[in-house]
Image 1 (cartoon, rainbow over the protein chains, first blue to last red):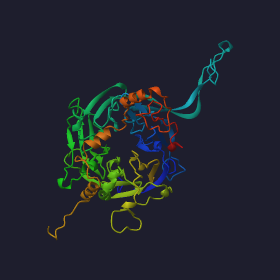
Image 2: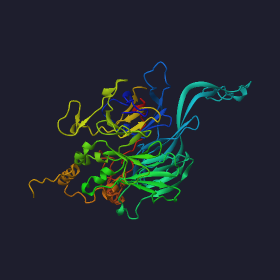
Image 3: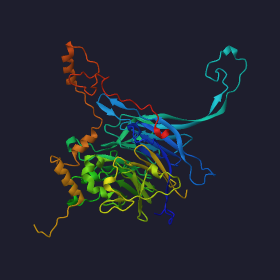
Image 4: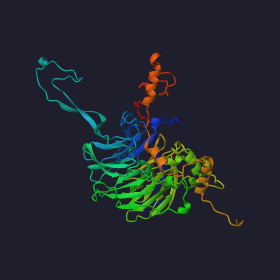
Length: 446
Length: 99
């Protein structure tokens, strides 16, 4: 399992785990999104209770040579609150669907967080000094009687304990009739898109009262509805290009230079289906739950229920690679349909352009190395939490005789889903979210 | 027909047969409108004003019932009021990830 340098396998070790130990998970604590910022120094999580927690990597400690810095809580705030739209009789969840970081321009950090209806731009800033020595105010804030002031002094800044403040700088509301599934910041760092089930809107980060609709797939007659938008992302380098995926397993690439309304795609990526293999489940399991460009922008990855596919932007008629995440579930589709698991939306992420990662059930997660074609299954569990101990690969026994360390398909816990994972942009550090815990793993050589 | 010939059924088709056996009335358009409409209507909570007004008329001569133990009953005889609707409380507790 080679890293980019070739020859060295990545050996994943447990580093940290965040969250409560107890099995009784409150709904609000369910993690709904995980995202590193552009430098990897900050790691943000969003949850079903509308809260955002940001962790910061410690500066590398020379005396602790065994690992890169640990991630500790930097800031936490309530991003969204539950709402009720009385006009539409619609309950609006506070669950954070996505967080996306802006690249850092000055001392403060900015991120976009969104629930089903409203996107917010948050500024996270540090305060480590405060002014002291005012003439008209006491230190505790009480006003002094001006007649008692006999001399003047110049207030000075004095150091104080670090305070990290989060404040909402922009609120982008009322632009989505349906439920927002994606936000993506453009490479121009001025605009971003937000996608719901049927429409995609383009925003300017400075302007909240206007949004441009760039994709609209709502049919004139809702009875004719056959597919919905499931994810969307801007190209990492071309500011005019974005893609969106559908519940039917297609990906459309659009060029905003072609027309104001990008209803006609520039490219349509779709793998032809073998009609003899079609079943009741075919369309459901082909629904794409996530789409992500590689860092270079030459490839994109899609995640459907059972597999991860790599597409070359220059080839529309089939993916260049397909990796099976948990093919053994194909013979369990009936019960997965009955318990709704078949509708679980797994995300996926890249390490540069070489290795991809995605989650599965039983708190397992999978990595596929595009170069060596090798894959590995690991588990996020508190049982493996000895730092610097390499994680043991897991194996699921699909049928037949189960070997000693294997787990049989029927023993998998389908309530333990890993839907959200993130890879540090520069180092071999990964963040893996189980239902209510956040695991951080590092490469042993760190 | 031919005893030697055995039709190989894909795992997916076998699962489909299992599902159809359990739910014979399963719709003809599997991934189609029904799923999608359900997805689009997430969060919809309907208030029936007709029910509300009829109940109000019925209750005219009786005392208004206070919110009883059956808080889920919001239409019909029990007059729904904003207080009776399940409260959507925001989470004021800090996330356990930050603990």
